Image (cartoon, rainbow, N blue to C red; front, side):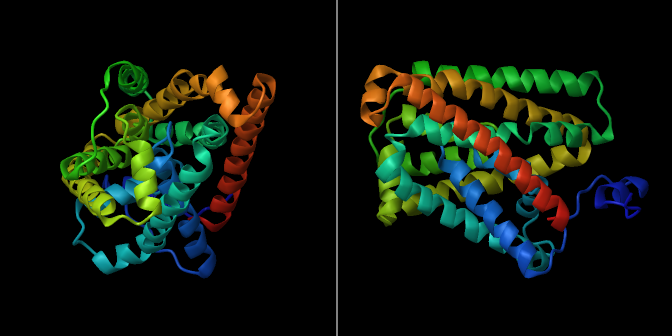
Length: 309
């Protein structure tokens, strides 16, 4: 067994509750963080998921909140850690926007099931991490309430959100929604953009590099994250275990809610006709995608553990 203590264990021994941002070196670590960023960027705009969920899965969420909550502290050191993640996030958003424009609309359930498998495959490790400092009634209650809340929110979004016309303030609002998806793991803000009739327009705007779409969205994302990251950091500092269980509840709840709100409606006859697939074939492809996603997440976690990113 490795006798080297983790940073969290060292902090616990010293009586501190902060989580330090690691200083990673080497090309392999840099590339792994770049890949994490690409997948987080995809998750930020993939219906049914959120960038926050994948940030949690890849072990960068806590560090990201600390960085954004006190952005001037040790700026250069922290920037070296987050630079490949940021580059990857931008690449992921742009690349997936191209995919959305050409293919995602037709094969939505297959794409979503792939990433759903990716999330579900990591739930055991997330649950274990959440309980690393103990698991009592408060933690379990937080998990259950968060799980129920995100399921209700996603279902209400399907039923009650009206469609809106794109414009400057609307795109800033859309960016704020995406920012919330980064801060609140499990809150799939792309779902709400779909319900509002903005998702396809946004994807095409990003693909075509339309600044009238991209700039206000970026403004909304940045403002929301900077406003809320400090509060999130304080919650982690004073309620580490409870907040981690709340995050696990959000991840589980959003994973459950994806099936009736995204996957099943995408398998209705009209959508099957667009995909040019029968129901058994489409369902089979969804199952294969789900299993593949779970397998990839397991393999990724093994690589991540080997290089301690």
